[in-house]
Amino acid sequence: MKKIFVLLLSAVLICACDSRYDEFLRLIPTDDTVPAPMPLLNVHVARSIAGGAIIKFDYPDDDNVRGAVAYYTRNGADVSTKVSRYVDSLVVEGFPNTDSQVIKLASFNVNEVQSDPTELSIVPLAPTVTTVKCEITPTYGGVKIFVEGNESKSDLAVVLLRDDDLSDAALPIRDRKWVEVTTLFTASNKVYLSRRNLDPVEALYGVYVRDHWGNTSAMTDASVTPIPEYKLDKKLFRDAALPDDNCKQAKSTYPLVSLWDDFYGATAENHMFACDEAPRPCWLTINLGQTAHLSRIHTLPRVDYNIWKDAHPRDFEFWGWGEAEEPAGSENLDNPHGFQTGWVLLGAFTQYKPSGYLPDGSVGDYTSEDREYFNAGNDFDLDISKWIHANDAIRYLRVVFVDNFMTYNTGLSTMAVQISEITPYGLPVTE
Image (cartoon, rainbow, N blue to C red; front, side):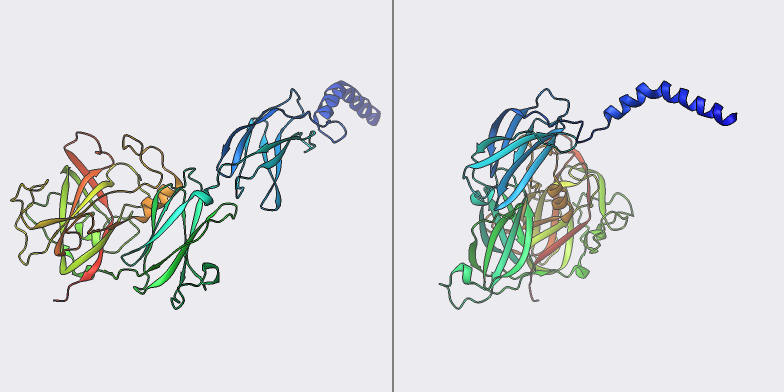
């Protein structure tokens, strides 16, 4: 009897839910129940871009459509680009030239069944690998590559090669025995990229650019001899503690000596210098403990801490004192800061931002490349063609913090500073 009752109850429940169950089944897509979608409408090229184009379209009034897909051939391979129905355009890119390209577009449903294709032709603009230009020049400790012509700010790999055999200057580039030195990455339009720690021996260097799709530029080559330089012995450094130094440590956990302790963690206390409520600009002086011709100065920020803002220095000046006697203080008003006669300007610099500052000088957004560049620190080359005393022999290095990211372009009279390391390079003078 109980079994009969259970069967009757089950039958009643099934009947009661039957209409909902049928509705549920209708919602489950199958190849048999979901028809092929209707084709895309108003397919057209919105605009051509470097190595490709942006294609716009409208979706048909068809609930089965789940998105759009484009098919094309790039560098001999069949590829596709797909977007969801919430996007009414797609990008086809990576073409190596400006030849006309045939693109086929279709809509698709949840089962990836596609509509009849719509065909159109695009004419890409010149790809970045054909417009970018590279120049190789010597720098202290290595070579420097100037890259420009990346107007679209495409992701590029800059490949540096070297051939040490200079016996046959007429040997074609393709026949050279190239050895890869390094690959650097950038998405900037105009940027200097450096490779240091190279022997000061003449060699033939070549550079070419590769994009995300494997397209490459022509190679540029130059015979270059890296300029000799050495990292100064920082064990000899000490605080000059001059009377007019006005950038004082904020507290004992942020001492001045941390600027030359060669610790690159940069976030821990006792390994970063910081000052608060200093005049704007402010400065400190390092007794190098040796006389040297400086070639460049590397600075390291407080890594990954409030980057591109707050107390990180934005504008730097470096001054040198080469006299035998210790500088006495501020006595001369012939320079912008009233420094004593004998101080010479080695160079003035702004923290470089690969993606560039906004027209008013503000930072704006920053890219992943900006972040990596910031955390890697600066290499400020002391160029005698810009500053006539850049390579003078000096014993005291004065670091002037002209602005930080908070005070830039403001009327503030005080500033704070936080910085992890200062490392001078050059040629020590034998005494």
